[in-house]
Length: 509
Image (cartoon, rainbow, N blue to C red; front, side, top):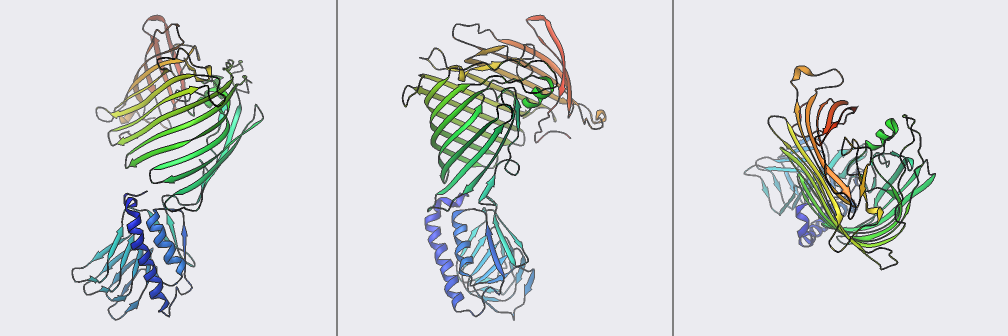
């Protein structure tokens, strides 16, 4: 919510008095809204939403939504609602004025005898213009007012509709992998009526996996108040611990080359707990504490169609059973003109309560930092560390990780390393080539130096780190690179593939 929301109880009283004064004054006015209709959509700041709803629901106001100049002889009797317009006042308004996403210029000698509330608009007063009542301005809230055939529509920008669809028209990005084939998910969130300053909502989604011919789905009920949101959810899904290494391009890798850099397992899970969040321009920080009960079982590799024709590797089994745990997670994002960063961290403590089959404690720490180097060059480092905390020897296999292949360590085979302990650090330095090297369609290429270091292992296993060095020529849509392990002279190899170029504030076209 905007910064003004922390004073809402006192401000709301003033706002209610203001709205009531509009209604009372309107009762004495012979001119209602003149068949013009004001529609309110979405949800914004609690205080300003309350003002708008009380005034509009009264139905007794005069709407001004046309750009105009009101001359000195044109005395108006309020209450007046000015929206979606630019207006210049040279006259006297007897009563209160509400401004919504409009520009109001009070020229010398103009006068408003009542109170003025300005919501997401602009009020400019000449030195000799007077307002007898109080002036309350909400400049940091986001509302959009637009003219319609019947009047004006005022939309709160924070949530422009009470029904908020996931992704693109409700559909999330589809996934394609060796365990489920094509997975499609559709979902939406609906904002329920406010309870005081609390904002409840319900979210639901449904999905389908073509290879398994299984329906997935989940539902969540949450309540937000200020920077705190408490939610409870139940879900049936297929999950992976390896999404950090390969995101949306993993499905393309499997479809084109038959390489899937993730392992999967199925879950029926219930979770509940609060999330504390704080954000401002360019940064966001959230902390979540959840109680979870997770019933997990192994999935076979069904080897759905891919163009390579080779049989995909098996999806390894997990330790089927229930994990009852407390999970504490922190997520932060920061963006500035010269750097972009993300960090996430978490700990999980599982015990044999609520039917839990496992007892362990684990940690997870990862992040990504990209910064502007010389000129428009880019240095990027990303890292991930996972494993059991002291007192725990090993984790159930649904908490294991894989490394190897293009997603992580180039010179190893796909998912060659597997275990419950993980260390990975990858760095890149990107140097855009001169503008005259720009190619049709492929765009401006860049030379990139790469270094990757990592391993994953189990208790008592080989924890030696594997190192890769490489150089890559990248365009907007494709790349060619040479990589090798310095400890293995025969490991050098050339790789080509489809490119996904991440853009930064300092990136060149």
